[in-house]
Image 1 (cartoon, rainbow over the protein chains, first blue to last red):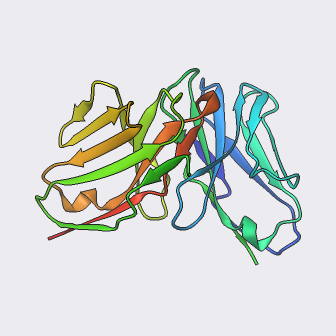
Image 2: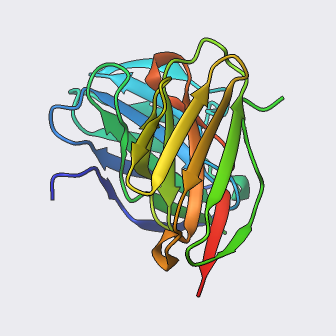
Length: 113
Length: 109
């Protein structure tokens, strides 16, 4: 399968714990995006990378959130000191350069107890 | 005003019906527009891009009206398998997307 992959698919954690998610984009896609989706809402933009450079962060991305893409391939999204409001589906997408189709991964569903 | 707004739905239609979804966007500088389909608890999947001239893919037709900042999706001859949530997506800066809340479609026998 050469699509976008995400790991883990599900994560249950206790409030206050740190969590890290991984996204592996489609190879040769140099743009990588993170979105968050809660029930009944569309995906909300969090941040995006072009190669290893993080070019934009949404105001939704508080100081507790950090994302990296160290070698311009896979990316990680870390949430520190999780809160119940962080419970959501975290979606990763990738695309080639330019205004092109974004392909989404299956998402990581986070539940904060 | 939200960046992207869609008909709230849900739309319940019988098989074979024609159904239309509407979407408005606020950023007049946006250049790329898409319709995604999302099944329950799955990731969004691209249904079609939307071009100024309008485009058609089988039973699906998408239209863009830049002057009114309005996008539409028409589904003809609805199938049971068309039941899903349809998300309108509009380019924001850096080619990331702003999505609407989605419109739920249920096609019944």
